[in-house]
Image 1 (tube, rainbow, N blue to C red):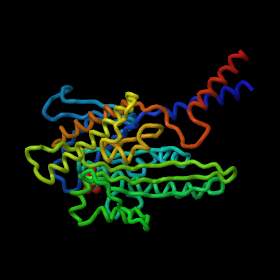
Image 2: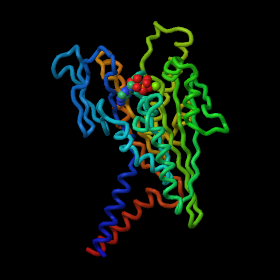
Image 3: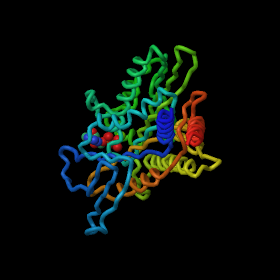
Image 4: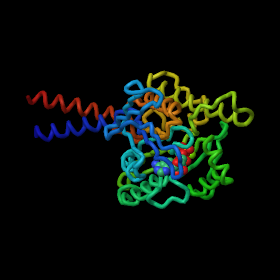
Amino acid sequence: NYYAILAENRKLHNEVQELKGNIRVYCRIRPFLPGQKEKQSIIDSLNEYGDLTIANPSKQGKDGQRSFKFNKVYGPEAAQAEVYSDIQPLIRSVLDGYNACIFAYGQTGSGKTHTMTGPDGASKEEWGVNYRALDDLFNISQTRSRIFTYELGVQMVEIYNEQVRDLLSSDVELMEMGLKNRAKGATALNERSSRSHSVLTIHVRGTDAKNGTSLRGSLHLVDLAGSERVDRSEVTGDRLKEAQHINKSLSALGDVIFALAQKSTHIPYRNSKLTQVLQTSLGGHAKTLMFVQLNPELSSYSETLSTLKFAERVSGVELGAAKTNKEGRDVRDLMEQVASLKDTIAKRD
Ligand code: ADP
Ligand code: MG
């Protein structure tokens, strides 16, 4: 009947909206650390609608304030579980055949690894996105096992100085091992990890138990190298080389995102190892989300401002609709159905 058609129409319309492909940007501000002397925060205000205002210490009043708007802003008290629950639908959509990519971007010490992995030896409560996503995808794939048979594959690589290194030995597919490998030498860990990108990839293949059709999805979880600008006059040798590689790959990432936004015919994926590794889940029909990590300290003000400016550019980017990797029902189908339902309704009026 008429109302059923209207309801269906609305549902399809919502689905189409949901699939519209803006890059989502979630900003997260870490707390001051225990024992940290500096306690003056640059955060002026933030709210649940994604508004963030920061304050510049050297300028008084309104001149010293800058406001930004993101999809979400998390204050220092936000728990890992809260952050995860907001991205859970995106993560789970991989089981429906979507490709998704989640980045953590920000200067060294801003909480990228905290968000993506969690602290060393984290309890379940402190788990970051990587562990939660794996746990969630395994669990959901189990509960769906009567309708769908899923195969999950895990891969972890580190990109350091434009070299891609596999962090999982070929026969043991455990992220724990990957993280330990990345750690080689306790202090070297932080130093090196802040200068490398780490990419955890979860591949999913699902087979419909009834008709045997299959779908594929992939999730890339990326802990990027620190985005801080390095003073060229102060670094030499290996440090300079690292800085140049990081600079190059983060710019290449920006170039790809902005080329996608402009619907360029040529997307420069091949300009860096990072964009090559992420090619399948950047643009095209993938869903993209960026965690923009911030330090609260006044001393980081200018670095934080440049992080926020980059984030602001990224958050304006529209990539077009996300699509599943299964045949048949995609956005165009949905659009056509909406059109034909509208037509039906118009004829009845
Ligand atoms: P990055 O990976 O960006 O260099 P880290 O994730 O290593 O930064 O964070 C730097 C420090 O701040 C670590 O000691 C980390 O445990 C702590 N930290 C970061 N974010 C949070 C948070 N949301 N809550 C508590 N501690 C945090
Ligand atoms: Mg880190």
